[in-house]
Length: 104
Image (tube, rainbow, N blue to C red):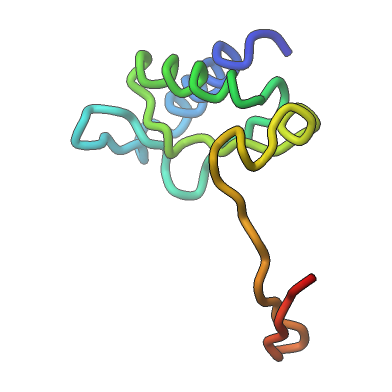
């Protein structure tokens, strides 16, 4: 709970310290957790908070690849395909090893 940007950064700082022997640094100087650890943030996430979280992470020297954003109620209720000017469509699924078309 609390400010999502602060919470994400604090959690990432703890993880970066705990796994410091496996932390790497990007060409731009941002710290990256080992590939087997990432943070998923879903609480308090909406189209306005994501840039704030990423900006705070950058200011703390933490790479964006350390976090993924969940699509909780705020994203579903406050965002539509026009908000980010993109849409994702399912065109094919695999069932028991067999590809099947998906359409309306």
